[in-house]
Length: 364
Image (cartoon, rainbow, N blue to C red; front, side):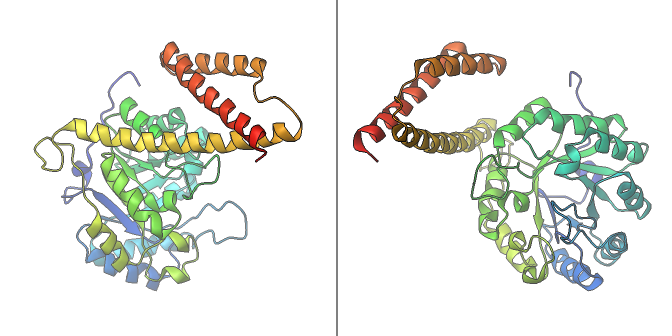
């Protein structure tokens, strides 16, 4: 957007916050006892500022647990009354939003599938218009920063100023160890385009498994994000949804104990200045870049074997010329220097030909 967004800082609508924003609670609310038992334990940890609980769960295929429904909103209200924690849940359409606002739910977030549909986001925006709601917007399932920005803009145009973006990862284009590919570049681009919008990370949906939650959470702080949304269940082994990515409240506390919270202010001893934050972001992107190049070379090996099987040369000049022309044009659209793109893909192509030639010579 050309004009600066007048987004309220988190401290304005959550004055008690004194650390990065931490939202924690079950992926899905399953019973009144489960909701309250989990909340009581989480409330003892003063690093938790908001209790989350899924009421309506959009599932990829029918037949899976799709949430307890509207009764869960009453359980959230009970959690707030007993623990004092603000409560939040996901809304996927206008009806959900109306019900949540009627029950006085403090925080509503729009899920990745909903963010991908401008029509759905606009319907939600129409419902929250004129309210003082806190609306969080998860990234769409694909790394489309314009679609993410568009959803935020629709909420903003409805008069909402308490807005937070949530990075929950993207549908991977190939097999990765994570459930959803982090693609930090898209997060950085959102920060560049909308610097006023606070961004937090949802490591649970990026990782998909408990063993990866720490590394994703730490990277989020290394990247300068303002908080985390982590799923916590009283007994994850019995969870009706996403049991592999949820932590008990006790294990959540252990994870939080390990995290180093990064700050962008120059007077913080962990960082001399903003430059350190930017360098951490570059380090994360370089790692992703190398991982992508490694995946590309794996495909090159498959092509080499296929060419050998069908007695085809490693170098095909017409294909190379077309590829180079297309990459240079794409690079220019992305504001990359033409010479830089040309040299980069020349090196990549030369190594690809070398690799395929070795495959043909060695018979591997």
